[in-house]
Image (tube, rainbow, N blue to C red; front, top):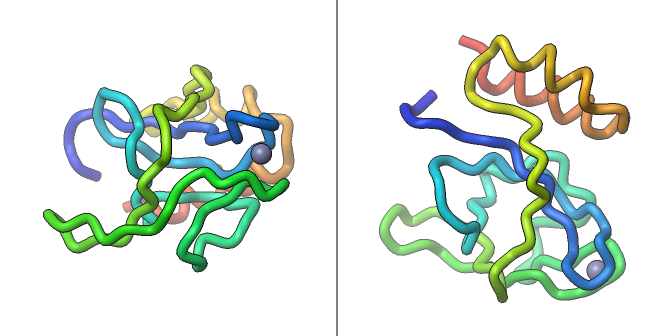
Length: 119
Ligand SMILES: [Zn+2]
């Protein structure tokens, strides 16, 4: 894993608060775009050119981020981020994260993360 720190953000719709996906964000700062390969546990299709919440509110639009040629969703507004940080890059916190998570889908996402990031 790259240096610095990253965290798993729970991305929910600003209009209806529906959970839309989890996103693994590197570094500090506001979330203005989401790289598609960092989206985890999406509740909606991420293969379309728009990203909408499960109730259909538009959240972002697909772009290719020039600098890295990576497909991403550009978010329309300063995105509300659930301040709960489920996870930091330290492996020791996975157990802690599991204790925080009661939703089966989130636990599944955690399993996937372990798969992806284990050496
Ligand atoms: Zn919504």
